[in-house]
Structures are given as structure tokens and as C-alpha cells.
Length: 146
Length: 374
Image (cartoon, rainbow over all chains, first blue to last red):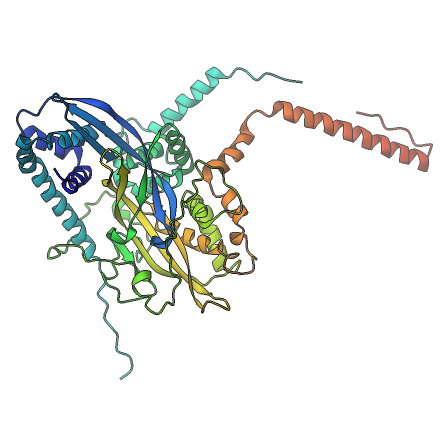
């Protein structure tokens, strides 16, 4: 598994809700047994902004962040991080990371979890964009005089 | 003399019980859910997160409920909770240029790539009380432009429209910013540390200071170059993968203020800038922050310091509502011993004063009777 898809999967699962990930997991049969080897634990991430959006970094403030690491019975490790305090959410991301390292699981994970979630995320973002677009101003110029 | 202050446990317990009872209100009505606050009073939630300096909408909503809607108390609660958490990561700088736009306007350029998007705004409302809400009328869903398949790119206007170099550029010199939560503030403070303090500053306070610059106490001729609100993905670097990953997204408000010219013998005149950035939908806060940020650059830009908003130590040391309300509120703590010593001192001064008066009177008129000391 290459790094890009690992990062992309982590992003997709972090931007999806825990309820939806859980629902997709239950559609899978025989989810491998796993145990948490670190956390899940909640702490904070300090967020940086940039002066003027492009200039020097500054510390904006913190946000809650939860991380988890799990191990499958065969010792495969998986890691997950998510904004907020939902332990189960972080654990599910870590679990997906672990099982994705097994060839026989990759396809199942892709079909039953990642593909539907990616579709939902894209649709949610499209609707947001379409809602914002409805408030876009169409200027017209008034003709003066005559 | 030390007087131990003890007792009142039962009174305190009953006071808190009464508070909880008041907060719950009429038991015939359903209790307000934290989720409802997060959903329906989101601007209050955003303000609490911003001033508490902790992004967590659910906890901010809880704080708001627990504080019976007292925003300053809610900020205090969330700020206090923040101290219980370890810091797990520091994010990559948030890329506001890639924000998923909910609102984006410019008061300086009309035709901009991506357009002027009003978003969910109170602007242009007539500020008339809506009695339909009192009657519980149905609210129609937001209009959606279904033919839109993806968001149009909304580049940062100040970067895009600056071919002529008319506007000051903000360029990253790679310096590591100070962190006022780790190192106590030290004056003079650089801009990065100032922005961190302003970002958690009380909105009302910053608004008043920003307003003061507009009224002439450190005028800097601002224009709202761009204001944008929306969702930005948060990325952190993780050692496990030696990679930068996205851990979710947060709502942000950003204000790019363009201000009147700076220039020197070496540099041609150009517009200068002020910057505001805050958690959630906090447009007014970011505008006020940008005005104050610009005002605090007076010294750097060689401007005379004539207004309170330009005095960094004054502005920054009093911006935090947790600090301010803490120190004001401490006046309610028992000061019985302090006050007793003041009373003693005052009585002594008055005795001495009376004695001096008597002495003076005595030299003027030895026949007048001595006033008895109290």
C-alpha cells in the first residue's frame, strides 16, 4: 500500500461521520479481531494560521483531537486520528488502516466502506457548493442619463 | 491579624442548587439539548470557541448551556477544560485559500474570480423583529442551485489582483511563531504573538478598539479587501507515517483589510494590510481584529501613536476576557482582613487629622474646647 492512498483513506474517514463508518463496517462480514495498543486518547492540536493568509505562521488556537492505534491478531498495526473527542471514530480509522495492509481485505474495504463514503462526501460537498452558489451576486449595471 | 473565613458550605450548596433549578426553568417545557444549541445557536457557540481558544462545537455548546447563556462564563468554562488536555500535535498552517466557501465578499473589487457569495448572512436584513418566529412558523429549506456540480475556485483576492504591487505582500520567512500559551507574553511583541492574543480576544473589546480607529484615534483608512467564511481542512504531521495527514475540517472566518499607504525613501507607496482570523462564523470579530492588527503596526510603519488601539501593551494585556473577568470578579472574594486593616489605617489618619486640627485651633484660640477623639 502506498503512502498516498493511506493518507487519502485517513482523510476520507476523518471527514466522514462515525455513524456512517460504523454502518459501512457492519455491512462487512468477519471484521478481524483487534485490540487497542495506544489510546484511543483525546488531546489537542495547536492550529497555525498565516498572517494575511500567506505570510508568517502564527498560533491561532487549539482544537480537540483523538488518536488511536490498533493491532490485529497477527500483529499488524493501524493508526487513526480525528478532530474531536470520538474514541470509536479514531479506533475505526485505525482499524481500517490495519486491515488495508492485507491484500484480501483491501478490495472489501474499498467496495463496502471507502467507495460509498467517498461518494457521500462528494455529494455533501457538492450540495454545500450549490447552496453557496445560490447566494452568489449577479451584478448588472444601471444605465444613467439618456 | 488573621481571620479564618470558614463556613457557608450549606449556603453555597443551596445556591448552586437554586442556580441549576433556574437554569432548568419551567419543568413543563422540554429541556434544551446541547445538540440543539450547537445546531440553532451556532454563532454563540462559535464565539465561545473563538474566545476560549479551543475548537470543539459540542463542548462550547455545553459550556453555553451550563453558563445559562452567559458567554463570558462559557468562555471561562471551555478555557478551563482546555487546560486538562495534553497537546498531541501542532498543525500545518491552515490554508485559507483552499477554504470550502460559504461566504466570500470583497468591498474593493466587484468582479472577482469565484464571485461575491453572500452565504448565510444577517446583512441586508431589516432588523425588524420577526414575529413569525414567535409563532413557530415553518422555515423553508435553503435554496440550492442544483446545476452547480462543484465549487468554483475562490483565490485570495489580495494575492490575485496584485500584479502592480499596489498592495503589501505577506510572505512567509519561515520563522517559528511564539506561543503565548507556553511562554508568557513579553513586550514588545511580534506580529505573530499579537495575532495569537487578538484571536482569543474578547469581541466586544476588539470591536470598540477597532471602532475607535475609525473615529480618529489612530485612523488608518480601512477597506474590507476580502472576507471569507467556510470550512478548512486541518493537516498534522504524524511520525508514524512520516506524512502530513488530514484529521478533519473546521469552520473559519477570515478578514483581509486593505489600509492606506505606507512607503519610505526606499519603498514606493503601497496599501498596507491588517488581518483577522477566527474559529467558526465570527465575521465581526475578524473585522475588528484586522483593524486592531493594523493599528498595532503603527510603530513598524512609522506612524504617530496617538490612539489607545495603537498601544500594544495596553491593547493586548486587556484583551482576554478570562483574565479580565477573573481579576474583576476576585473583588467579590472575602477581603475582610484587607478591609479591616484599611479601616484601622483610616481611623488612625482621622485621629491624627483631628489632633492637628485641635492643635491649630488651640494656637488660634486657646479658649475653644478640645474636641473629643473618637
